[in-house]
Image (cartoon, rainbow, N blue to C red):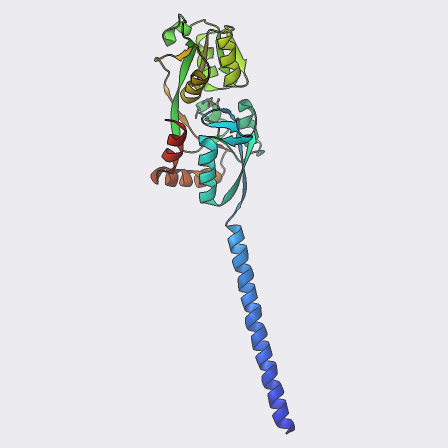
Length: 256
Ligand code: GLN
């Protein structure tokens, strides 16, 4: 009888420990799965931009919207990052990326050799040209005519570079809108700026036009801290989103 009781007890103990082992195991596996699904979001990426550059980045209903934020969001979703956008002056973006304050910069930013000394660039995701905005009745008809004119640009942009090669009389503004306002007020003779923002400014302000004569093509890309592994990750995503048509779709949504 005692023996039988001992056997039953032993069996109960064995069952209990097997059950515990199994369920503990399950729990552990479950926890691992939980972690795995959480690590899908690898962390947060801070994007430095200047949201004064419609249609690439601008503020609408208190939100930063545009081509770049949408492409950045698609890239982050693909790579498993959460995107946070930090708005700043265009001129501060490279410094923010260089210092690690931002993980990448995306702001209709043209790849230039000068900038490549400070940051790396991903592959290009789209392109542009610098154009000249003048008043409809301006005597400036081609790019030759901007020589020594009073030019307005956005500080630190490629347009600023072109203006500097052509004139010593330059007004540098923190954003394109201020430059265009000065043009409408007759304070400057022309504004040199990227094609699509120029089209928006001409749409939004009466009496302005864009000259047909434009400058050389430029490539837009994302800037990243030098030698960061993030550049390769971003490039993989850019390639996939180019191939599957996502990037073209986003651009076509904003540029008709
Ligand atoms: N594409 C120009 C540059 O990179 C202007 C960019 C901008 O003003 N956001 O300098």
